[in-house]
Length: 326
Picture 1 (tube, rainbow, N blue to C red):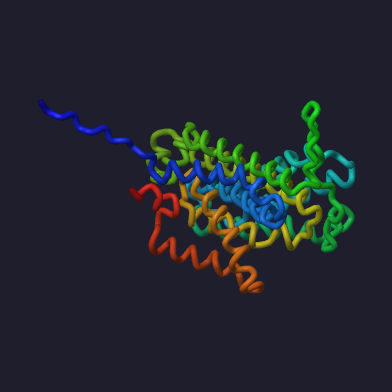
Picture 2: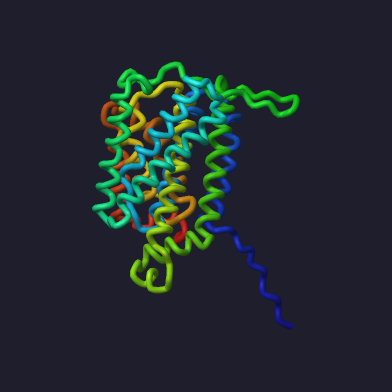
């Protein structure tokens, strides 16, 4: 009589287990770091940078590289800040309006640069950062120029029945809000990747001429991806400005907010859903906790170092390495 073969239990691969463990860790972090507000602040900023990288990757899905997402980030930040100061509108209203202003700027950029590809498109987007930055820096009557916006209202309290959550004065509440926003962005990106728009962008990236030959409106889909990317980027900028409660043109229009999303998307894995967010949640805390205390003036060399290592040894990024591991 033959023995039945033992049943093998299929364990989830790293590409499935790690996101679950990461999400569990992020959910439990406010309880684990309740007495350390700095840890919560670092991971709040890391989550916000993760949303920037995810938003940037929407445009990258179509094969375009932007070096000017700081323009959308800064426009969203200043739009929300000004509206919350002058008319005194609630940040819950001004934050999505900041996203809409970012999307409006993206329409202009997309229409003017629709025939550009490759390095020409990247350099054009980099040049576009200077336009809103110069306008913001010189329109003293509206933006206060180089003095910036000070005393911005924080995120107001949320009232849910008998519960009232003071978000602006609580590091853990601010963290949970940004975590919820990041999860929404991940969900939207996942939907996009599996939609007709995502498939059209993939076809345009792989072979633009063939995509046009089968009737795909490449320019239209790329413009739509730029608008969606800019809307999320502007929304992130608006949230950022109400978390910090101040801003100056040199901060929100800086190269940092243009380069970091590119680096995180490249290190995490372009054309993936979770790769850019994973890179942001790993690299930014490592930079702040380890390298910033050692090298206060040059700690951001970490990003360049990791980018070089990924290009040389992990072309598919962190997420590609996880998928290949047993």
